[in-house]
Length: 178
Image (cartoon, rainbow, N blue to C red; front, side):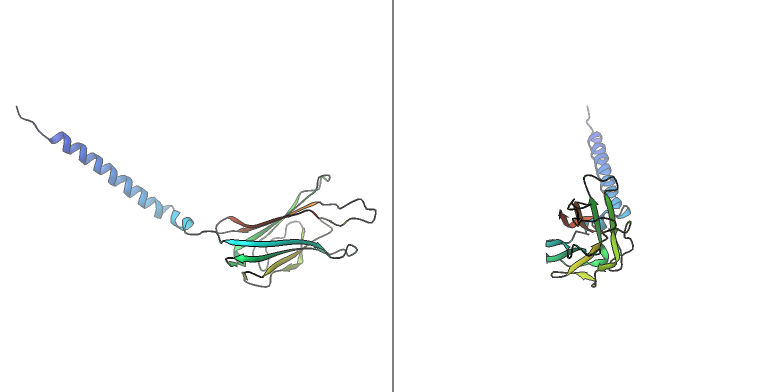
């Protein structure tokens, strides 16, 4: 009786061929589907931001300002951020209202006139520590002032979210209840 080792070598060759095909498929899918670009585009690390919502003079119509100040962390190109503004109230069917500011420093969208297009103050190309983004909320769209009858404001919640668009990461988020 003679024994042959052909069965063992054919099994090993099949396993090696499957392994080679799997490795080639995984490698080519990274380049074809462009996964490597998303992996290498991390969100900037914004260590700290401060936000304030100010009603400068209750008797003046255009006086509601939002200021978001970069306090520390990575600098961000202003053209890569999007500012989302949401206003809500608990007892009015006309709310919530929303605005999206893109294409800064000269925004493309303003969203239902919620943000006053003449009072968006982003006079720089890079949002770095110490710099402040400022814009005004139209009182005709969302009035946070207490009226003369002391019945309270029309709107009661203001949320400002700043998103880094290339990584789709939130880099600053503030909620205000004046």
